[in-house]
Length: 582
Image (cartoon, rainbow, N blue to C red; front, side, top):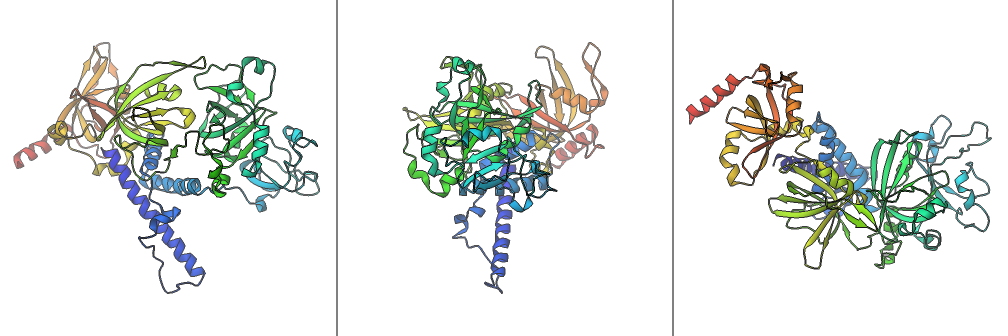
């Protein structure tokens, strides 16, 4: 399919670019050190894959990122912009993730009165609790009392943002900020075990009503985008999906408005200790328990980089109650940046962050189950590629999202979890709490606007002739509208599309027909359902699926304005010339 070829081309281009950048950096470094002054640095093929900075680009990662960009940019992006965005993200995220490099924080020299610290993140060390250069936030008072972890702030790192500078203090002094996190290390194991003793399973409605304070130890599995809060008095929110390390239950941590920037102080994979969060009284939600960062809440963070840097894998003894088990409770392998693409016939037996790309063959109806008395939506889908098919169980929000898709469409599922069961079959599960995301490539208009697709299109006569004999069930073509008819029984419009080499009837699903009409300023005329005459001859870029029934399904379209002079007569003449030549 064209999208697969697009991803392969992007991977090749990016790998070449990354290698070129790395060679230039190394050459400049050698020149600065007066080494090999008269020679150009060259990376040998023997050691190319041992340097994290130039490891091959992950096919799955590129596939998910491109699908994300094209889904959320319906007018498309230029290839230069897309490649630069991919390269930037890859360099910032993947190397950091693999090598355990901490998050980048602003240097101390940027703390000057003319700078607004609302837009900067800092990580500083508290040397002396008695002589603060920051007015302490009221939420931290309980940790400064003698006898209550008195050594907590001894040479302790803290991360914060949104801290204004005092205009009256005789020296550089921060005003208090609620956006502050206490950074832990692997040496704080005793403190963690003593302080964070509660599990999500311990939470009851009576405890919430009585105002009980909870202390949870969790792991960040996914940080969602900023979205509308839909809460009175608040504008925006960010949902952070977390997993309880004592019970493996999941919850949603909500950051509202000015607290949203706290998501810049930790990253996916880090451990969070939450002291006295606000827990919503309704425990029976589709997405699990919901907790908030309140006025009394204090965050503690054990960065994943600390465990990687100090090689604390020896601490992970395998029990689900081991709070340092950063490989998760099942000792699963993280495939977030796996180099090769996973096909349906070669899935890992114990994997996290597995990405699959394939065609939707079946979508089941909701079959909810009870989890500790709470109903949880459950959907099963069948996904296929050229190697076979698999069944995937999707839970909650992600499952409800997939039910809006159509059989025959291609999707990308990112952040899946795989596990080999007792029958040696691999179970595949997806849930927002483990970071699962879905992108519908077939309905994404953005990729139809990419100029390189003009070299990937397939003529309709080839589709008609060979589609039944090859693994070809979705394609992109540039064609014009030749005719149409209305199927009143199915309440859809069937379009007759012509590209000059052949013509086919396609069924327009969802709002595709309305998109076509809106794009050319036409509409249904009268109650009889007749279409205006100016539709004929309009040029479109189309994404079309071939269903098992042999019918063609129109998934997405954009109007092609690049050659408005082309007409139906030109298409007919073009086809006649081909027939005469043959």
